[in-house]
Length: 263
Image (cartoon, rainbow, N blue to C red):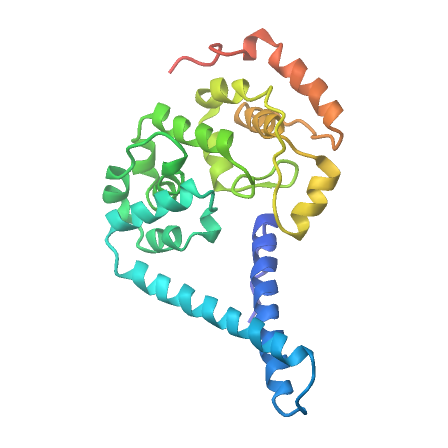
């Protein structure tokens, strides 16, 4: 019987998988070191430290499991509240247990998820992404201005940008949602083209990206604007080169604020 070829793994999935594997590795190593130290003579300086670390990991694991069980018993309305809290804290969808639980419930949860989306700011980000995941039709039935308001506020107020992806490598769901809005998202993105605050991503890969590209909020806005307009532009590593491209794009009258397609 011929084996089916494996689907290629997206870069974002690879990074998330590495984080998960690293956590598992730390836990496993800690448990191994603890168990191997049990039969060793006392007096080794590292044994208490290893035991304490493994104890901390065990407590964290217990808390995680207990919280996920609690989420499992929550109503969709309660889950929406948890996602709102996670959104305000800047937690990404792949790090939000409430988001995962909402998505796990699928399309039957869509009506209530939509009903809980009331604030057009970053507090609604994870709820919006969950609705987009479980029911595209319900998601599209939301007022486009509301969707853009949530997404643009989340971009503007982000401290870490893992939730968006990395412009020259891959986009996460939040960025894909912005791109799908096309010209409707152009005005708030254009307004961010002067925002030179750093836009770091965390993690080992993130540190390398930060050192090489030094991404800023304006770079994310510019890249998303290009993607929404279906304009493929190579992203230089040098911020100065990006500034020149941003200036060229923002000075084009046909692409300026208020010049988008009529609804």
